[in-house]
Amino acid sequence: MTQYEPVIGLEIHGELLTNSKMFCSCSADYGSAPEPNVNICPTCTGLPGALPVANKKAIELAALVGLALNCSINKHNTFARKNYYYPDLPKGYQISQYELPIAEKGLLEVNDVDEKQLKVRVRRVHLEEDTAKLSHEKNNALVDFNRAGVPLLEIVSEPDMRTVEAALDYATKIRAILRYLGVNSGDMEKGVLRFEANISVRPIGSDEFRTRTEIKNLNSFRALVRASQYEIERQIKIYEDGGEVIQETLGWDDARSVTTSQRSKEDAHDYRYFPEPDLPPLQLTDSWIDTIRTQLPELPEAKTKRFITDFELKPSEAIFLTSDISLANYFEEVIKYAKSSAKIISTWIAGEFIRNVNELNVDVNTVPAKSLAQLVNMVTDKTISGNAGKVVLAELFKSGGDPAEIVKEKNLAQVSDESFIQEAITKILDDNPSEIEKYHAGKDTLLQWFVGQVARATKGKADPVITKELMLKGLEERRK
Image 1 (cartoon, one colour):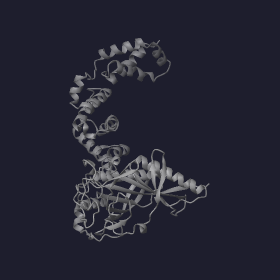
Image 2 (tube, one colour):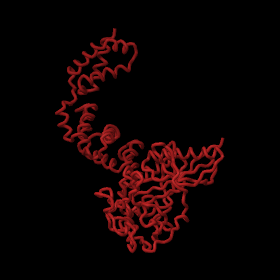
Image 3 (cartoon, helix red, strand yellow):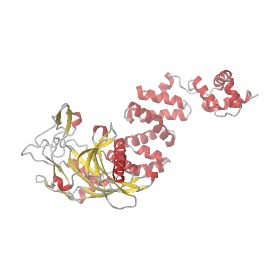
């Protein structure tokens, strides 16, 4: 039986964080608009006689992204009209870039299966305007033009990925880079970042490019993975059954976990691109490009390497911390105040801290960095136990406050008094003779159970090291 491999390319659309829209002065913050169709003007609604003016900030941000993706910046680039009709496109065309985008020929290194490194070429980075937003109610379609004209950046890869894992890592890294640059919030639930996967399959060993399909508007990593996996399997089955894949645009039905046909896939000539007559070409100078280059921050890959070197973290630990700019900054802020090692701080952040962040759906800065450092310091110097530390952390997320005061109020200070601990141990051993027999019969794992019983009885206050020593001694004393 023929074995197939997928050929995957991604188009990523990200709204740029500018104050105004791409070609007019209307607010680009459509999310906070009090009602539909208030952040609009003749230009972004496509009224006759209205003329566009390119947003300088959007151009700067687009060039910044191009440089971060190792692209060449085209000093001469142009806008074009992409003609197609859809209810959310007020002019009947979209102002975009076609022949001469702002940046092209970039490169991004991603992780494939088994952590193999893969270089994915970035074909182009170009500017365009977003469409309006459609809402459907029964038999009616409602159009909100508040989003129409918002600056949109499109990043197009070459079809260099052969696994869904590589495509996921590519998309994850693009999102992280956009957030590090401060050009996009990365909030996919709000639709400010969207993926489109171009997928075909071919026999392993072949270098042909077969008919591809495009899955539109995937607004989560989960949707990207599931839709891509489904489409790969669907196309393989078509070829195995002797059929041919049709070039078309697909949607992803998350509820049914299937791709659905939307329309036949357009090629460039279907859009009848031609130069935008109302916008002059952009002429970018070397000095301007150099100025933009100086704005590049430390990007995720460089920060990961530094965390590994400077803080002696494992690659997996560093990658986790640098996957999100807010998390990376928070970690470094905690380090400033901590007496504990970076390794211990990393463990707390990757464990209990991020668990609380995710469960409560709050910002990482909800607990001040200084407070977390103080808490971890108290656990490290054995002022409180690790379990008590979890209690304090939960309280910090819930109500804030000073960690030391919380420890005092909840009476969580760790006790090293051997007489206090011995009293609890003696009672637990007296109450559990059958477990003592099992331990003496060779079930050594019960030691941890006994230690846990002491922690429970003392509400986590007993020093675990002293507890273990005294428990071992008590168990030996009761050996027949």
